Amino acid sequence: GLRLPPRHARTLVLEPSPVEAGLYERLSALVRTRYRRDSASGETTADTEEGSGSEQGPRIENDGALNRLTLRLLQMEAGSSPAALARTLGRLEEGHPDTDALGREIRDLRRIALGLGTHTKVEALSADLCTQRDQTIVFVTWRETLAFVDAGLRRAGIESIVFHGGMTAAEKE
Image 1: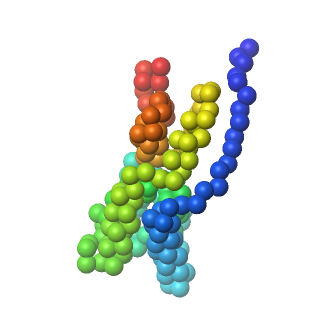
Image 2: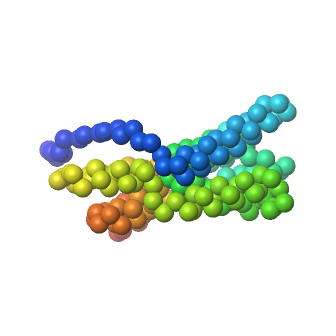
Image 3: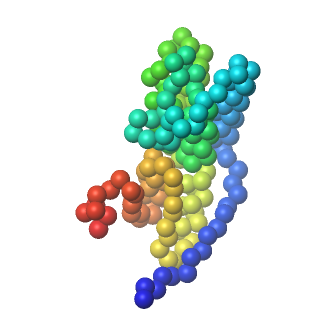
């Protein structure tokens, strides 16, 4: 039968950089504010109305509000990478004018996310991989995070191979 090498999983607890922490705090404040607004108005949004990270992207309510699923998606993406977060924020920008307070906050958050050329997690991963002799598989949720991690590893001089579900069979070979 097929013999696989032993698997080792590790969790590293990291402190975000001041910019990373500021971005996450601002995004969390936005999410809390929107959740409270929905709760106060008695609005509910069915979680089935939107796919997470689908090609269509997050749905914007008719009144310009973010639904709860989109708010959760933003929080998850912020925990994954600034690149994943920036993609969804970019889609949300399209539905919010500059004169809208929410639109300005979305643009500011996206600008900060795009400005993060590196990330504490990618730096820690790079440092950890430099100590490894064996090949390593790193799993991520979003393709934007995959590209972000790949670029960070390459900047650190670490060879990486990208593999994701959107690749054709020939590309996976």
